Length: 394
Ligand code: NAD
Ligand code: MG
Image 1: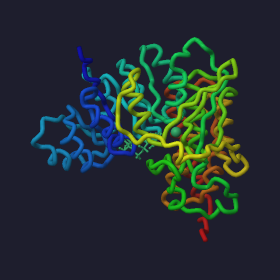
Image 2: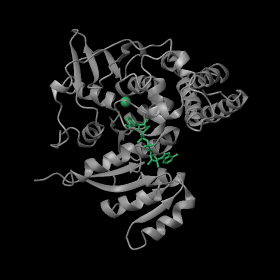
Image 3: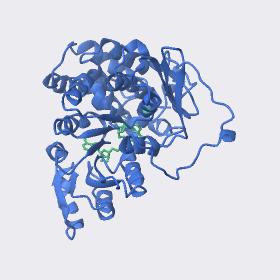
Image 4: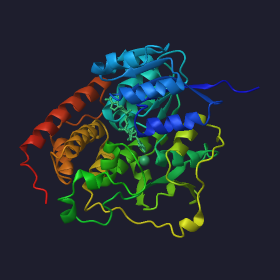
């Protein structure tokens, strides 16, 4: 007897992870069906995806695009909604088995909580959700017997290394980092880099926000916090090692000293497919690894003197409470400004550090406290930003 189709909702289907998820599903039509697709404002691509995958529901975040989407899809039986609130409602639909969260930033928190409350399993790409409110989200998932499957490649690697080891405690994990486009550069060089340089990642093709986070190493800092909550680890059990080839996706060390690593070409389709297909490994024809093209895999220490975001995120990991929420909000404001050429590369860390010092720390925040912390931090980061003189870029 064949298994029933797993019915998927994709939040952020028009982005880098969203489109790669649809590529996976296109090749696994006997395993998955698409129930919900959403985009913030890319109505044209969303309409094209609807024609191919026939979901029951679509949501467009930007309400001004609703009429256009309705016109585009007028001949199809799909239900169309708009606005932020609609996201949190549609994820509760009976017809959904798994919600894949591929939207960017803090916006992922509310719909994820809503999906968990409705008992939907989560395939989590949106790491910011766990950074902001990891304790709350994982606690709620336990209460509703919901699984959170990692999509982030490092966390998928850790999860794959844990298979068959559920009763063996982890001693520590190593998250691998490519080092980004500025590995080996000094602060003098970084003082004048522009977004065009930061957006050229050596190994991965991703959305703009995470690409800048990879260049500043904030991405690895956020991933340390994400790992803490996903795997129930203490901060001192989480380490980062730079591995420029991005072939070893991360490692787990057990109490006998043995290390397990998960390896493969840098291709997000694999962790996406593992999260959706778990516990099955589905057959596919993705490009296979060729050892002779990678005669050496190398490892080095992260340069925390140059890339201060990693130090700031480690402090947030250790101190906990609302501090990770503070660094996330300040970072979102800083990265958006950097992408608009409104601040320099190094100033991004200054803004984050300033907010960490000024926003009151809370040990056990409630959901409302996180909302307030996020709002206050964004306000403070924006005012700090405007107090900087325009950066001169050579
Ligand atoms: P992206 O910018 O390419 O796509 C984001 C998607 O979310 C788009 O469909 C966009 O329309 C939608 N969206 C953006 N803001 C929204 C909002 N406020 N409300 C509703 N929808 C919104 O981003 P991405 O690179 O696909 O990353 C998505 C998430 O996955 C991020 O949290 C990122 O850290 C994580 N992630 C991405 C990769 C990768 O390879 N791209 C790898 C690991 C983790
Ligand atoms: Mg990652």
